[in-house]
Image (cartoon, rainbow, N blue to C red; front, side):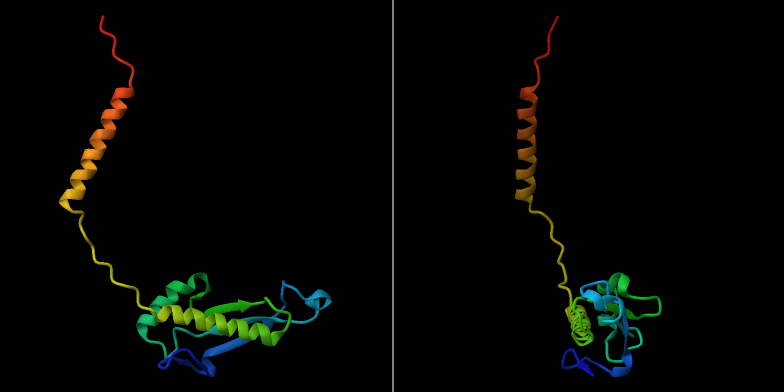
Length: 140
């Protein structure tokens, strides 16, 4: 059981891990020992995650979110299974913690009348400068 916050905990049945061959460091053991961890979290079926957290988690997970609502996290940085397992769980916890943060509501504002006037005046001034750079017209 993994505790994310005081309200969110992940049960053991929600997590499935499998070990595959790693492409990272390992020396001669890289072809013999399966040290990379593939952690699968059944996010869509999790009763402990609120609906809004699931929605944000799906956006944050991106390509790691599967069609059946699971998140697959891989870890192959270290040479041993226990360290890669801990790294994968750490990545999952960090992802869920990011999803628990509600985004701030953006209040739309309009530019002030004074700022609009200053902008238009600067555009007019710039146009006059550019106009002065042109070659003078020849009158025949």
